[in-house]
Length: 355
View 1 (cartoon, rainbow, N blue to C red):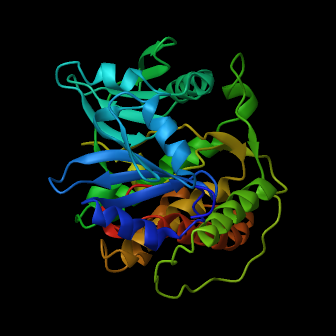
View 2: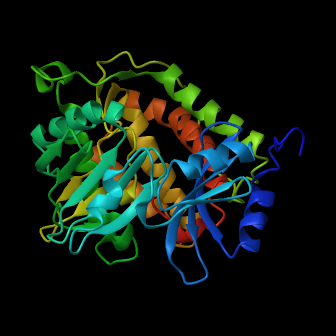
């Protein structure tokens, strides 16, 4: 410690310090080299949020401003939804039947309501963007969640539950291949939509081109280096030959965060999509590569044995053009590099399957 400032000790050291407090680090989100958001489990198997700050004085200040939290050295522990930036979380949890599903301190929280609907709560400056993307998703000619309410005072949006089971739950099911083909068909339908026509009269999604995706990947890799976070020991990949360049065809609406946890398969075998928070206009190869990379990841995690038949089923359902197939390997390499860095911040690995 120098002048009450801790040098970043690395993720392994922080996880060890938390273990001494009786807490297990499930996953974390870096907000720079001097701040880490934490998803924790205590000795009674209860989930709680937390933060690590490089300045203990700052941790104490945040705890003092956050009712229900406490500071322990450089850590802020925030049980039961305590959050100075998202005060609506604690209030919502007082509602009968409300359950906190996820809490990224001072950024966002997701609750399941007693009626099965879902409420997202974000910072006030992020609320308008959340409303716009959720309503745009609702308007798509696909199976997407219906918007039930948007509360500016709470900075919240509530959506209905989309019928079906997450594709993650079906990967070892006899119907897994057909579920993946249905996913490919639905993703292709999203990418066929004309962005200009679909978003007419609405706030247009931001563009996300190849340089932006490279920047996101590099950002995660830098953060993993900052925390000396050990990269997961994935098996070697066979990277097919291909090029990575801006598409010459028109860009499409893309999900930008597509993985098996964002895909629901209903009783009729049809695929629906959820969580369009990052919807953008970009290269459809990005979505397809991200989904393929996650199917590979599930094999690394021991969820499935061989991802290749499921990947082939997705491609059969999607039917990518030769040009898109040419761009896939480059985007797949970027997706793998990003996931390596993202999962470096998830010591529990398999216990936290959904990014």
